[in-house]
Length: 466
Image (tube, rainbow, N blue to C red; front, side, top):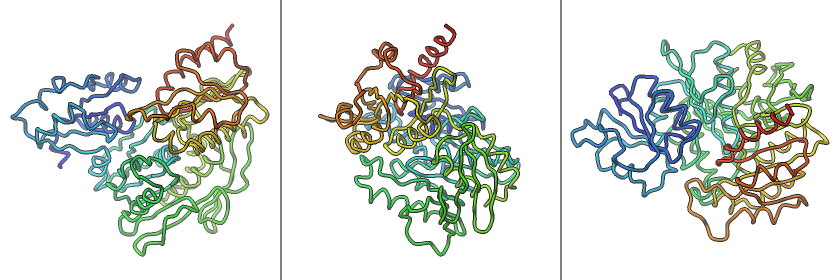
């Protein structure tokens, strides 16, 4: 596939956070871009405003004419799809009969980064924050880099950064473990933030998933560097590569020390070998984000970024939307929205709220994501959610999956040890919320719970005015 010869690119699942970044990239380099997604979202609305045609009905007749033509040049057009699309998808199956190149998102990322200096960040969780933090540190320092991110970075209000193209490009990519997608990447620097069990519907068991991460680590280019969280089962060091671990504590190649909170900001020192970078500050909450910063700083120093630029860049890093994302912050209530959809992500988010607001009453509203994930981690979800004071639980967001008999949100609710817990629906939610007393509110989940964020924010802001 020669990207320079492409004229038309069609995305099946264009509204996904990773897919939309690719769509924006091809639009920016002058290609004709269009696509399908299941439902309209604020992100698809943005793509339309940017001049990308998007439709929401799975009908081959709605494909652009170039993709329906029997005389089209297959080399001039490409189809990009997400593995989350069901196998019976009408458009995708029609396109398969036409002879076009049909690639997964990750394969396209592999093509784009093939000749670039590539920094790839992988992990069950932490990869979006860490990759966007790396990209910001590089951009803030003046380095000409591009980035394909799995979230909307607040500093730039986008999931895509594009370099000038005037020199050999440096590219930061979020490496997705779903469907072993990251094995299409061959980075110069790789970061692995976590390897907790997830996507067991794909991997079958944790051991197979861990083996996939080890294969990803081995795909470093000769002389490449792997930076991984201490304790992960990475395996023996490769003779071709440099391995270094990091931790929020000591006894690692890179670690944080003198961690403390002042005025809801984290302060710490970064340690690497015999070198110490002192008096760092970060707006990002939680010890897990201090740990993410340790990894991001290690990458920045590896690329030769000065200590002053690192300190200033970290202090100005604003985070990613839907990652401990403050919606309301006043004397009456703190409202935070978070994408957490794995037990460990929930634990980190709730623990961060406890650290920052000790003694405050915390209400969490959680929407489980996927029937298989709920089935596989019901005990983990219950344990993490029991860290709250009150819980409102929504029904499972199915995403790409069909229902599984006997798997529902009540499975989690019955195991949660809280006295104040309830099942509710999206429709019932606003009225139910009024009857709860709390100091801190968390909305949690990766489904369509984000549709509640705006109305909740407006409700609290309106209540404050009155």
